[in-house]
Structure formats: structure tokens, C-alpha cells
Length: 513
Image 1 (spheres, one colour):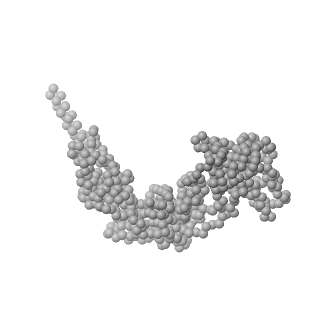
Image 2 (cartoon, helix red, strand yellow):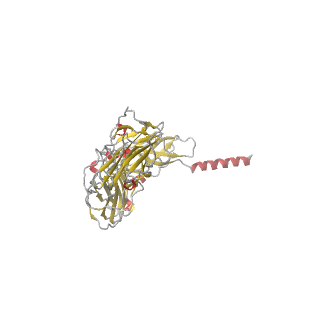
Image 3 (cartoon, one colour):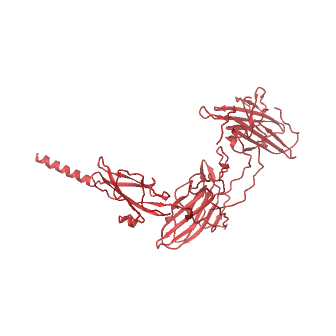
């Protein structure tokens, strides 16, 4: 019995020791649900934390938050910006800051401790940080800059569908024969299909398109035409279904320009033949289509549920502007913060190193109402002496030239890419220096470098080297804000147009050349 008592007493001692080395800890500190965020614009940022304890049923009875203007003051448990005192509450998330008013760029170091239901305090958490953004428009000292280049002329005349009609199976063909013996200078075929089309000329597939009623799909078919009877054959699939019902239609126009200046146009109308079945050889000019139905004319192009079809010429995409400047720093750097708004997209480099791990910044907004900027801590990118700053600008949805159903190409905010930047440097001795976007710098326009849309992402290539080669003086423009303010329908038709559910239709049209 005595031995049993000793053993039991030893177990109690070991259990007490185990509890003593597993204290309650406070961690995962966040501000506005972000760990150590930069660029906070909330006047009363919300603070959160989590608690870890080995004690079953542990509860927080109260908390204390300290916020200091420096890490040294916080280490001394001095909250010169805010000392909440002991607050009786079990809440651990979205506690609003109620300390001193915070100015632009202010750094706030903070930590928290808690008490349990027995009144025992935890140790303070590890320190965390948040930094305020630029809160007023007057805090920005730079100017909007970008590249101005004369708009290139269209590579070819605009091709209109104004004389074409929207047609569909089943409701209609005299061929237009030109005098024989003339030479063809050019032959272009434009289609607008809702929604997937495969185009053939004289049995040869010449192209395909998807949702081309909102794009400029023009095919060069000169080599496929013969100085005799020709057949244009188009198969259209409407991919609607029982849930997503949409109108179905096709509009097309073939323009053949002869060397003597005359033009032959063949447009979709009721002279086209149509069928709801595709049989072998239907695309060739030897196929007999007498049994096919005449096409039903739904509406002239510009009417019906499709609305206007763009007749603007295709304008080549301009190269992505590469903006660059050098600047000198003199002294030991305490911290450096870069604030940048690059519309529509940007990539920034300092001394040949990409700043941050972000892509597709800044976020997409209604640019005529607000534009977003991004804040970067760039202290580690800088050096005493000469530094080089380079920014590549992309179009994104700010200057979207790609025609699509969303009409971004008609957006009221469209303009060439531009940038607003402010780099604030604070030295150890208390001095401050601002590097801003203005007319001092150089510009590289690399014709081989383009900003390309690739599956909804922008591919930016070839960073600007530290030493520019053959740079011209920076061709910039300075403009007013591209947005209104600071960061900060279509009618349905009752007309009986075909409402297709994954249907396939085929059309044929004879054209004598």
C-alpha cells in the first residue's frame, strides 16, 4: 500500500509539471483579415487573433491590445498609439482600433494578451504590423504618365455587313455572275454566327469562328475562288441548351474586288439554301441542293437580338510601354515603400528584380469610378547609390481592344496604359526622399515585345535592363485623373427569333465569278 501511494503521488507531480510547460499562447494576428498588411485605408482597422491552449474548456475572459509607432516602444510594452487596457470580452476577431488618428504611411506595431476565466494572463503575442496607405489625394505627388503614339492606320478597309441579313433554317438563288476573264485583286469573306461556324469555299475549309457576331472575323479566300461557279458553304452549331436558350442566326458577306475596280458582293438573304442535315459532300460545288429549303430571313444586320455588329477596322495592338528611370540614394535606408497604380496592368522591377509576387495587378474595377493601387515594401530592393526603376504597362480591361459580348471595347474609360507611382524612402537619420512618376526618365518601346491576352492572363516578357541602350528621351503625357473621384440594360425582345438548343444547320450559296 505504501508503494502504491508513492507511485500515485509521483504521477500527480508529473501531470502538474506537464501543464506548467504548456501555457496559453496568442497568435495569428491579422489586421483587416490580412497578416501584416500594407496600404490599409480604414480609419479604424479591425484586429483579430487566435488562441492556443492545452487546457480543455479554456475561455477568454478579457484582452489587452497595445499599438505603438515603433518596434522599440512595443518591446517596452508601451502603446503610444493605443493601449486598450483590460477589456472584458471573449471576442477575438474584428476588434476596431480606437487609438490616435493615423496618418498616411503610418506604421503600427501591435501585440495582444488575454486572460482566462480564472484571471490568469497569457504572455504577449509575438508583434505584428500594419501600415496605412495614402489616405488623401494630396498625398500623391506624382503625375499620370504613359506613352503617346499616333494611332496606326487599319491594315485594310473596314468590311461591313450592312447589306447582309440574318438567316436561319428552314424558311430563301440566282447567282451573280461577273463578266468572264477578269482577274481577282482580293476576295474577303466575313461571317457573323451565333454561335459556332465552320466555313467552306468550293469544298475546302477556310476557317471557323465562335460568337463571331461580336468580333471581326474576315477571311481571305482569294486563292479558293475559281473563275466560274463557286460555292460558299457554312455549317453553324448553336450550343444553347434547355437551361441556356439563345437565338440562332448567321450573317455573311463575300466581297470580291477585281483589278478593274469593280466589286462583287454576295450577302446572306433568302437566296441561300439551307438544311438541318449535313450529308457527305454537301460543301462541294457538285452537290445538288435543289431539295434544300430557302433560308428564312430573320432581320437585317443591326437588328434582331444581336444588335449592332461592329464595322470598325481592326487596329493592330500597340507594343507594351516600358517606362524607366534612375535615381540616387544617399544614406542608410530605414524603410522604403512604393505605391503604384498601373492601368490596366503593370509589372514593376527595381534593380532588375521583380517587385513582389503579384500578377495581374491592380484589380479590375469600373475605371471611370475608381482605380486601385498596390503598396509594396521595397526596402530590400534598394541600395545606396544609383538605382533603376522599370515598369511594364499592359492594357487589361482598361484598354480592351478585343471584341466580345461584354462590349469592353466600348467602355467609357478606355485610354492608353498609364501609371501613377510614388516611392517614399526614409533614412536612418530621419531624412525623407520621394521618387515620383513625372517627366524625368526614359522610355523603351520594344516593337517585338507585346502585351498579349492568353486565356484571361497577360503575358509580360523581356524585363527592361538596368542599363538602357539607345533610349530616346521619355515620350510621356501628363493627364488628369482617369477616374471620377478617389478610390473609390439591355431590353429583351419578344420577336419570334429561333431559340435553339444545340442545333446544327448548313447553308450553301452559289456565286459565279
